[in-house]
Image 1 (cartoon, rainbow, N blue to C red):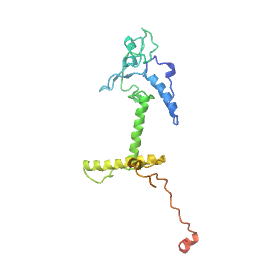
Image 2: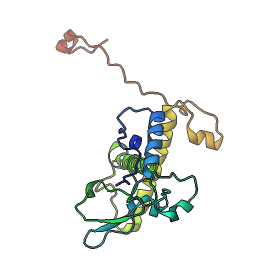
Image 3: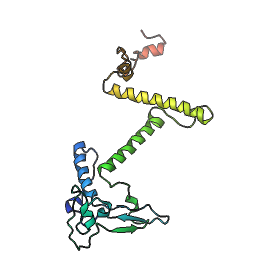
Length: 219
């Protein structure tokens, strides 16, 4: 929800398509940050009946509005709306929404902003970590440990996660052709195994069809 004084250039902003460059995302998020100054924010937690109050941007201290003198005492770094004293604008109003009103798009932070991207990136990192633990490397599932008791399982899982962190750290360095971080930390001389290269498959011995039929071993 946004105030009706939201500038037209900030109303229909594009999304973030797959493959979008980082610098382009940064510029677009800056426009979403500008638009967030006109957004309504939660004024209270949802009640037991699902209804929740939202406050306008002037009440939240995000926007300076001439129709609400108190907001004009905010720093000049805040944007100023195009309202005039006496206008019936929504910048300084509060409203109540029911549980069935745009509930599926309500989020803690405004979508597309820098703060939203930070939250989204944190979730992606957590999901990636869970995938490494459960599927890609550690395969931690029911029966991963064969001991009874919370203390014993906690100790074994802690060692397993520490080993996983070491594996991920070494893989990160290997992918970039960097020496083993443990070798660098201890000051050891980098050996042949400090930068492991790709594994080579053993070459199969050539065997002719005649040798297979006659049972003679290949030369």
